Length: 177
Image 1: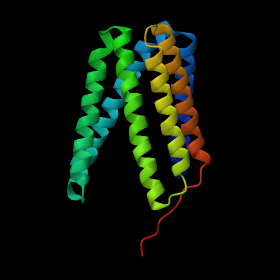
Image 2 (image 1 turned 180 degrees about the horizontal axis):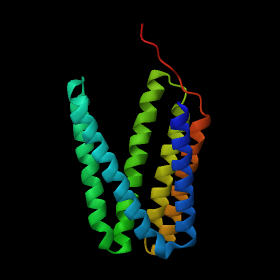
Image 3 (image 1 turned 90 degrees about the vertical axis):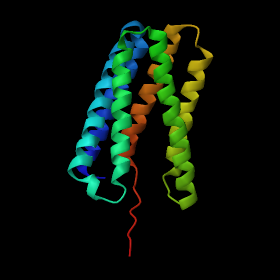
């Protein structure tokens, strides 16, 4: 992992921990802020992927997947931005759905890495199961929005801590001969 990537992971993880703590201690104000930040980040990532496709990836093998991913992420960013005026309950359901999606994808990815013998599959499995536990806890306490937001804040903080922990993890390097 490069130094720039380590700094980026640390800053992103720290930001997620701070936002999670803010959600936990100020549940009535944080939901709209989280949704606004999420929509801005998704739109920026989608635009960056589209620029990458049109400048370089369209000439590469599998470049169309960059185009499709960019369009999907940009679409999710725009949907997130359009939901900012909805009630907090619907926003939380959207965020919980995103958490569940991340958990399922992480679980599938860790199982695939286990099949290939990658040593980091246990960490990714633990991270995915943590996401799914947060989703189940949110669904269990779905009646009170304040508790729902606080549980989501705890999950966001744990996700940020996992992002910071990836800095210290050894990465397997595969050489093709």
